[in-house]
Image (cartoon, rainbow, N blue to C red):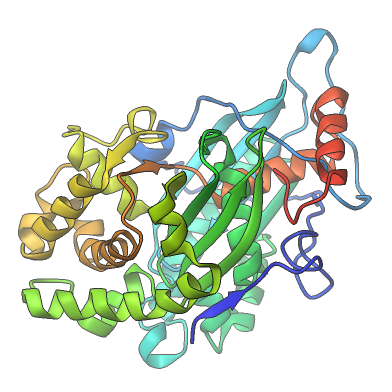
Length: 415
C-alpha cells in the first residue's frame, strides 16, 4: 500500500510529534572502535562549503547551546547526522560556519540492510552484521571528531522488519549509537529541507523525489516568492531499488517487456497522488521544477557527464534533460549485470540495483514530463544537520529571526 497524506497543520508543518523522533541534539559518547576509517569517493567530495538556508526550530530545545566563537571563527560545537537506509549507511559530521555549515568528515557504505526483507519480513543476520560493521566506523568518526550533538535515523527497512527492535538494541550495545525509526512523513520533510537550496525561485511548484532502497518518497511543494518551500502533499511508495530488484529479479538481464511491467507497476502507484493534487495539469501549464535526490539520479548524471569517477562538485545542482535521462534508463535496462558494472561510476555494488532505479525514474518522468531535472546529492542528512543546528541556535541571530518571521507568515513548511 502506498502511504500518502495531505499536510494538516499537525503533520509536516510542525515536524515530529510524540510518536515521532524528537529533534533534540543529544550529548553522545560513542563506544570506541578501532576499525580503519573509510569514506567513499562520493563523500570525499562532500568536504566543501554548503550554502543551505535555515529555519528556526519550532519548539524549545533542551541541552547545551553551542558556544559561538568570537570574530566569526568556527564554533567548537560539532554536529553529526546519520541516515541508515535500506541500501546505504551514510554519515555527515559538520560544524556551523556563518549562515551554513562546513562538512569536516563523511562516510558512506552500501550495507544492504533491507536485503530479503520484502520476501521474509525480517532483517537477515548477514545484513545486520554488515550494518553493525559500518555503524562502528560511524561511531568512531563521531568520537574522533568530538561530536556533541547528533541525530541517527533509520528508514524503510527498519519500518518493515519484524525484528527491528532487536536490531536497534544490538546497535546500541555494540556501537553506543541510538537509532530512531522515522515515519515516511518525516523522511519526506527532511529531504525537502536538505534540498531546498536547489529550488528554482522562478518556478511556482516543484516535485521533489527520493528513490531509496526500500521506498520512494515524492513531495509536491509550492515555491514561495523568496524561494522557501511549502509542502502541499507527499506520498511514500513501498518500492525502492532493493525490494523492486528482488521482486522483479532485475539484478542481471531482463527482457524489455519485463522492464515495461516494472515501469507500469510504479506508475499505477503514482496515479492516485497525481490525481489528488492535479499535478499533471500543473505540469502542462508550466512553471514546475523537478528535483531528484537519490543514488539512481546522481549515478545517471555522472554517466551523462562521462565522468571518469564520481565527482559531487559536478553532479550536485546539475541540470539534465529528461530525454537524456530516459535514454540512459533504456540503455541500462537492456544490458546485463557485467556490462552495467563496467560503466564508470556504476561498479559492482550499484549494477545489480540500477535497473530498478531506472524503472522508478522512468515512471516518474513518464507521468510528469518536464523538460529537465535538477540533481541533488544531498537530502536527509543535510536536513537533519540544519535542524539540529537551528535547535541549538548555532546560526547567527539575524538568520534565526528571519526564519521565525517566515514561519509566522503562515504555510505548512518553511525552509
